[in-house]
Amino acid sequence: MEAIILDTVPLSGAYKEVSFHTHVNCVWIRFVDDEDDEWVGVFGCSGHSTPRVTYDSQKQLALVVVSGAVYLVDVALRKEKWYKEETFGGDAVFIPNSGEILFTDYLKIQIWNHAGEVIWTTGRISWDGVTIESFDGRILRGMLNDLSPKGVPYSFDVATRELKSSWIYQEPK
Image 1 (cartoon, rainbow, N blue to C red):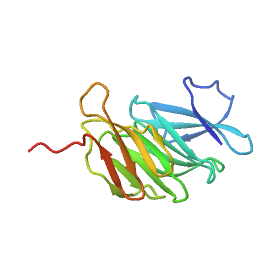
Image 2: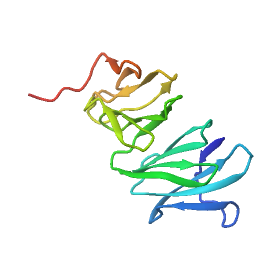
Image 3: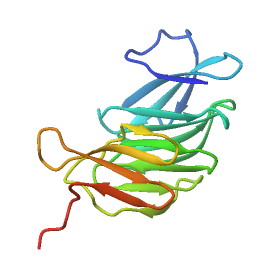
């Protein structure tokens, strides 16, 4: 299975298109399923942040994160399993063999269940940015925005829910 965010809108008729909450702003993603069947999903979004897509090839699921929304799509059936408005869309990865999703936005790390409901959250850990750089199935690694030019690295253990970093946001007193 493959998912590719397209830089340009494909020519009409080049692919079978499936629309998901389309409106003025849209992101186009080309999917290739396990049978090498190609189609394009057109996803409505509220702005121009960098879209993200991650997939669970075993379950033929894709998670699409765009400005203002998150979509879980069954790639084989070309259907939305769920949609949720998410003002601070960031990045996400599937947690292997669990049906759960790790989601980061500008402020926190969350774990969502298979229905997109928050089942755990860190609370605020960054000034304005939590990125995902890698995930090995247990340890999530990325950067927190501490207002320095590069940010500060963090690691998060999914099993223990332990967050490690040399800096974590603290509410001003």
